[in-house]
Length: 187
Image 1 (tube, rainbow, N blue to C red):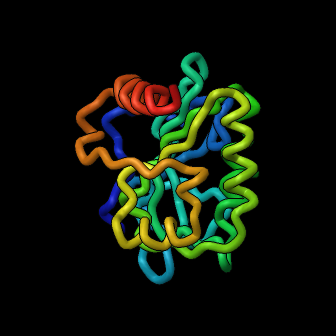
Image 2 (cartoon, rainbow, N blue to C red):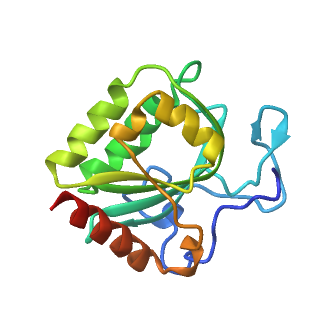
């Protein structure tokens, strides 16, 4: 797992550690010192710790004009023990919502397990973004992980979306593609 880096081809457009509105503003990273782990496996030092012991993230872009954020995730999403959704919602998402972002793309291709608990935080998040004509998309979640996510009926709140070639898009074009498809479905 230590060689799985967050997607870096958009770093010339946005870096969360330089964004004064980001929860990760001012962070510094090492390219050589591996200190964070998921269970007993070290992960690349570019991933951001947001308070979960099993799930890490990287904000790839936050566009305050277009009101969207793209966040890449790695690890195990564990609501049953760690209450990851609460930590994600309170410590990251709400900070972006406060700045006017209501459309979220969560890249979940490196989320290898999902353990559900209550749905209240998902419902709350969904209600908040829907009030602003926003949405939440889980992009490329592995099939086995999707199974557990769907079993908990959380796909009522977060749209599961597959786009294997998402890396070939610029951030705005990826956002626009997903936004156009979701808005077409709603109308």
